[in-house]
Image (cartoon, rainbow, N blue to C red; front, side):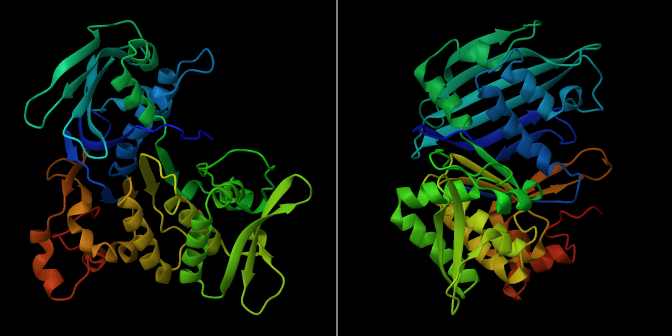
Length: 393
């Protein structure tokens, strides 16, 4: 697992996209907390995967296949181009980012992928980076790397070779974004893992199977983190007395979970799915080393409804320290973001267009009358109220 010793972090301000999969022309702004709702197949994962693509493409190549080629394959290869667009066709992407802590300076990375008949993979038709030194001044200092380039090139080959420090920082930040999907959590491996002492993991893998190792390392790093984890789990299961990591044999580690009135500890293999999942989310969201961007898809999976308020609280607190994108289908989780109405992005199909989805930001004005009557955001979503939207019909 990549470990972040990287100091520069960037906040995603805005994404502009054209001809990308099933999403209509996009121009979406992002804050510190972003909650995605919408029906299945509306493009929530497609949006997330644009950022995952940027992360994957910025990594240095480790074999003969370039990071760009791998990232393109993971994004969908020839299926990246909107299927209603005839070839030759282009996918245009623009990323607007600002360094943290907040500064007026803003960077814009533009990338145009060209899809031609007979080619499985696109080529980089154009890519450039520009900087806006002060808000409203416009972008200048443009660094053009490719234009009208019909030979396949890689992002790391084209951009990293240029080597200016601000750009290096930008790409370095991408490589330390972290993505999680509750459906990808492997509870069996998490429970059975016996990691070796000495590995340096500070972040959970996508499957979560290094949970024990990450807990151990972060607890060794910070007594405050150990206290936060124990308080977090006591908050959802008051019987919890203490969670700690111990040596299991000479070289392996295990998690011990002590509960009230029971002298002997329990181990992860004995704990419920929901408790193990919540321990994963607590470890991710309470980490003293939060990534520059944290994306979690469907965190409600396998979690008791009573714990969703706590989970939402953890997410909100973490968003005060880093940028978070959450996708959810759960009205019960959405209830606890009623105070974050304008951070909700709704995916919906425009009238007379069944093949594409638009992304619209929910407004306080659209739901104000319902909230004044005591409704919560999830209540409105649950019944398909048009003031919220995000339903398949």
